[in-house]
Figure (spheres, rainbow, N blue to C red):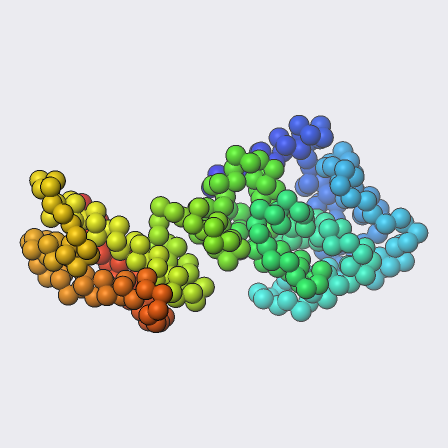
Length: 317
């Protein structure tokens, strides 16, 4: 995906709606001392809320200064490199709990984290939750952890270094319906567990083998076998039409056994009879509701169908 296009789209949306040129860098630079161990002050919160830099006040408001001034002192030393070791979640969770005790609002906590450490954090927002289909957590802490795990995973996809940049891109897509279809297809490939079965089918209807691989990873082997069977049937019928049916438009293909037998009469498939019939038998077990179909069966059907697909591809150079 064109990362720069979405970052520019984000700026245009904010400009058109609020008349503001976003200047996140000004806020980030102003909070450097927090990264070095200083406690948050109310002046820091006012910097974050500066309506000349971004439309914070259109969506949120800080608790009044009298309520939290003393509590902010508890943040001293808490925001120094919060993610020093990969997968060290205990320290992150404690930090989130500390900030929740002060702000009593998950979005406000996420805003503080995003501007102090844009490398690691993103703003918790409903548009992003909606388009990413992120599972809600049993607590605010777990919910935000679920959210940033997904955001961090998408850094590689979008080829950006900071989680906060993923936040910008996803928000821009969420706000522009024309971009949804392409993004859902990306999720189907990258974060398929976040999508419903219908989302997967809609996004990958032209690639049943990919759907089979996704359900195999989900450990739903019967469904995986069904989609691998669908892919096998498509490749087999197309290859029959290309080779065995060539110049014989009146030929009745019949069932899959007959198709394979006729296909294997041609030189290109002399040595494939046993291989193709083994896939056919796996396919029959996969689509029959009363027959058992195991993980090993799904794996064999997927790998065999991929091998068959590659043979067809090689035939075309």
